[in-house]
Image (cartoon, rainbow, N blue to C red):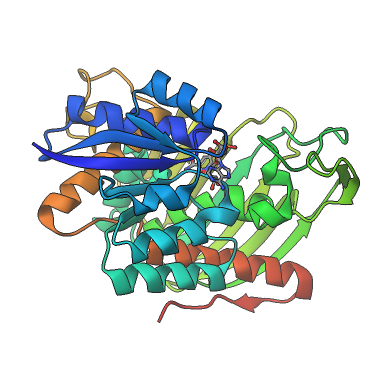
Length: 380
Ligand SMILES: NC(=O)c1ccc[n+]([C@@H]2O[C@H](COP(=O)([O-])OP(=O)(O)OC[C@H]3O[C@@H](n4cnc5c(N)ncnc54)[C@H](O)[C@@H]3O)[C@@H](O)[C@H]2O)c1
């Protein structure tokens, strides 16, 4: 079995999901490659060492530049906040490393363009962790659409709702709260939550041509954890937009961190001429499907339980009827990446796909300012 040495940057939420995936993937998928947890990098040596001990990393680094310089690292896995993705990825590409990068790819389209240019020039395998593509129910939705079961698609409706920033006493910036700091996050829910919805939407339904958006920052000032001062909040707390897809369908997207009672309610519904699909992250192992061609007496919404061996990825797991969850989507992504290495063709989402999503979020943020429909930049 070929070894693939991983150098992870960032040991937070995503550092854990990725590490879990690297550790588990060979237990469930037959692969030519085996990831080796070679080094974890974070600025605090003590914390990095504690993480390395817990998860089985062989060594630590406190500067990602040192990690990239190392000859014994094959893959740089970026699980740090958004403002450092570009710098790390561009340096990693120059050093000839393969790159797995968290979403959103960059703070904005122009920055993401430089990342795409770097990996294209270096010809290094690259992927963005838009993991929702690899929820088996979502992958099945893609298959049903590609088989033409829905027919012409008219509507796409997505939302991603949370409620964790409602308190005005919550500070911005620093560990755990960088998502509220525009300099680190790039934007608020647009780049954080809607980016997921946009990636899934374009994967399922093709590219988006134009958008019109409105955003709001409900709490205008918050204390900054790092400076100790009360500072203006630069992120969007809520973001809603209408979109027109290239295939003629219309869409609504909504995201907020002010929907009391919702922790991570990501849902989408797609309506086609023959059939419709609905999916809900809180019930991620189910796909709701309605097919108008069913016999009238038994026609209705079917709740498909995505646990059978003929469902995407599921033959690698337990027995039919038993579910998998969130963590497994990252395992699927690693499995697909490793299979892609063996075949010489890495599946998406690529850096180019990440750039396409950044172009949409750029257009959304622009439209929220201009209050006009804005064109989405297309990848050359
Ligand atoms: N795919 C998904 O579903 C998903 C979910 C959550 C977060 N994310 C993305 O993953 C990334 C990380 O988010 P998170 O929730 O894990 O954040 P987190 O705050 O839990 O962890 C971030 C980690 O990065 C480290 N870090 C920060 N700056 C660094 C630097 N300069 N060098 C090295 N390490 C540094 C921090 O110490 C911490 O360990 C973000 O880009 C975020 O948008 C994706």
